[in-house]
Image 1 (cartoon, rainbow, N blue to C red):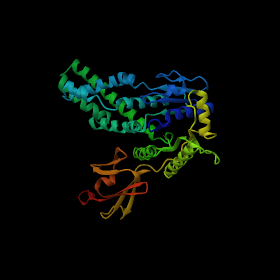
Image 2 (spheres, rainbow, N blue to C red):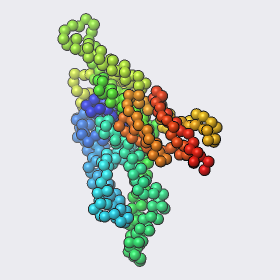
Image 3 (cartoon, rainbow, N blue to C red):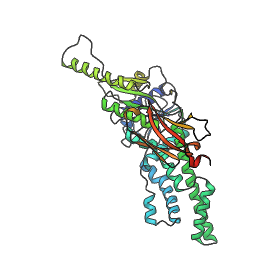
Image 4 (cartoon, one colour):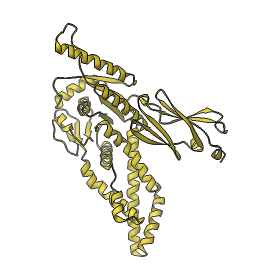
Length: 413
């Protein structure tokens, strides 16, 4: 799965559609699907699209769809809300309050991403290309499976027996005995199964996003403001444990011939020089980068998208992923033997581009709360570090290094 995102207006939808068309022409079945609420994929393809994948005329094997998050909200989530309300009401929460608690922010985007996962697994596609929303919304979207899963885990036990035991005791207290008790038990049973299904789906969704077979392509234009957001996005995606395997610099202005003069030639020469300076800065991020020339006509329709895809990818495979970085996080022993109280440890999180953003690190129980580029993630501490205290944190290139030493009060337990 290849996800395209970038600052609004940089051309990510066009490049996602062009990439899918290029894949289809190479003989693979490719699905391009949009999770952007402001759908423009149909305009790029010049085709009528809906929630179900449809084959696009003009090239065999190209399918496209829009995710209708509103329909998903009214369907699957409506049923799950009833289950959650049942749990809260059974725990003694007022019915009105329980109803409000089941209205969760970001659930529409989460359902959209889950729909992409189901489509990816169920369809005959060789490659799925996802046209995501602009980076700010995409970062929130990609953080949702873990955050939402944590929400469910904290409210209700993960183990099926533990959940059912809790719910069964609550239902028994309120339902009395006999047939009413059995009906209540069945209702709690269905609720527990729905929660187990939700947690399983969130776990699978998170695994799909972090899989080596999934990669993010960041689209940018050679402008300083856009480049700054690209660097922040790269850091935030790394914090979320997601792999960015390439950059696409769109709308690059070609420099005029050396002998050309006049106002237009001077403007193009100045603009090209400015863009080159920006691209040189972006290249220091160390990621593969492709450039796409600015064209006079907007590439819409399958023929224009095929030409654009050929220009961008040439003979290369758009679905080839570059090697992922080291897993997040990595634990290292920096002093002592590892068992003695004078041991020292370091937790290393690789965050490309972090030098240009603000970092915040805090210990919260058995987790480390790391905030970077506006994204916060709770990183579960390895067992050995749970008995340690944080002694410092520093940024070493792209690596955030958090130092730990054993807590004498807990280390010998």
